[in-house]
Every structure is written in C-alpha cells, then in structure tokens.
Length: 200
Ligand code: IMP
Image (cartoon, rainbow, N blue to C red; front, top):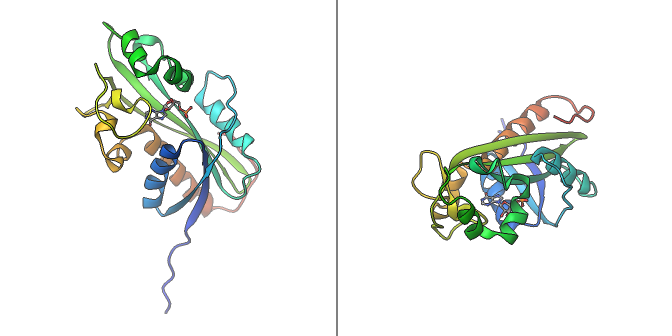
C-alpha cells in the first residue's frame, strides 16, 4: 500500500517586516505549515485594540489569494497604563528604546508583549492572539531580533529576547503563541467542511 503524507498547509504572510515573517515561518513550518512571505505595508487604522488593527490589515490584503495571515503586535507596559501598546511602532520611531527606558526610570518594570494574528481561510476570518509577560530591562542587551527585543526579558528568563536565538525566542514569544493558536485553528477548520465568514 502507498503511504501518503498528510496534506501540507500553506499560507501567505503579509507584512512589511521581514523579521516577523521569518519568526512566523520558523514556527509554522515546524508544524507542517508552509509560509510564503508577501512583503507589503498595510494601512493601520487608529484603534485601541490590536485585534481590530489586525482585522483591518487583513481586509486591506483582500487581493492576496488563498489562505492569508497578517499580524499586529505591541508592547504593553504596566506602569505606563499599557503604553505604548497599539502605538508601539510610533513610540519606537519617535522615543526609541532609550526614550522608553527614560520614561520608566524609577517605575516597576512589568510588561507584556501581545500579538493579534488575523487569518483568512476558505471564506472565514479569524483573529487569534498570543501574549508573553516579562520585564523591561534597565538597559538594552543583545543584538538579535528587532524592535524592543533588547529590553524585553520574558518571565522565567534572565536574557532579553535579543540575547536569544530565533528558536529560543520562538519557544516562548507572543508571536509564537499566536501562531500556535493559528495552527490549531487551521487544523480545526481543515477537519470540517468550508463554511461562511466568522469574526472571532
Ligand atoms: P507592528 O506590529 O509592526 O505594528 O509592531 C509594533 C512595534 O512593536 C514595532 O516597533 C515593532 O518593531 C515592535 N515589535 C513587534 N513585535 C516585536 C517583537 O517580537 N519584538 C520586539 N519588538 C516588536
């Protein structure tokens, strides 16, 4: 009898950030999902919620065929009432990591990285999330990764994300957790017949 491999899933990951695509690909490929990066800057609406931003980005990628994934992430610092949160990209460009450290001088360091991933698959539209708690380091450390990685130390670790290899970061990151949720949702969807659109 001929043994067949299980069908491979494949999806397009639309982003302007090559590092994000690489992280998502590392994680999803290990789960048997092929990731094709589509490099494009998608418009982001003003919203207080990452989920809404990710959902709007997915709508803006309506011309990309097949299964499509986009994501939006942010760093939510407890002592700053969740700032920069949905404004993380703006804060990174204007204040930078040094500005964030200055704002936090003398304050508790607790923070959370969050990702909202929006997936279009066979006419359905799903939003899945992932988060990791941690602390903002006193000074930047490490050269790997991107964005706030040099100042984010995930819970249970002494090293910042930027001091970890990509597989190490992906074993506990907000993005990897959102991708794990994407992967299990894809498998659930594959197991049932195609249906109408559902925003969750
Ligand atoms: P966006 O999801 O591309 O809008 O990202 C918001 C901001 O957070 C940008 O400045 C990113 O560089 C930063 N960011 C997003 N994900 C990560 C991450 O995994 N590590 C560090 N910074 C991140």
